[in-house]
Amino acid sequence: MWYNNNSSHERKEILCNKNTTLPLERVFTEVMEMLRIEESEAYKMILEKGAKEKSLRIAKELLKEGMDINKIAKITELSIEEIKKLMN
Image 1 (cartoon, rainbow, N blue to C red):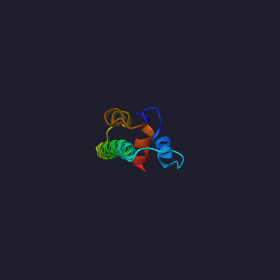
Image 2: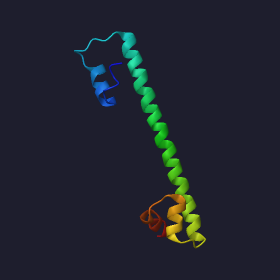
Image 3: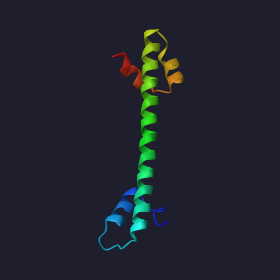
Image 4: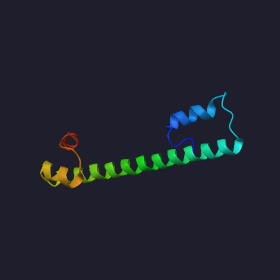
């Protein structure tokens, strides 16, 4: 398909260009594909944010228990700087 080598932004420009004539079915298909890709990316971002929030909650609890910052960083995969921010 024509969108494989184009970014989402480029695809939107092509679809919205008044000088481009595309069959309605093709436009519909392309728009649906763009929405599917954007939905997938949004879902991935939500999962990543949830994982990050969980790591931060775990780090807070481990700090309360007196665990060493380096061990917390290793367990949670957070940076030392992120963990130090939790201490304030």
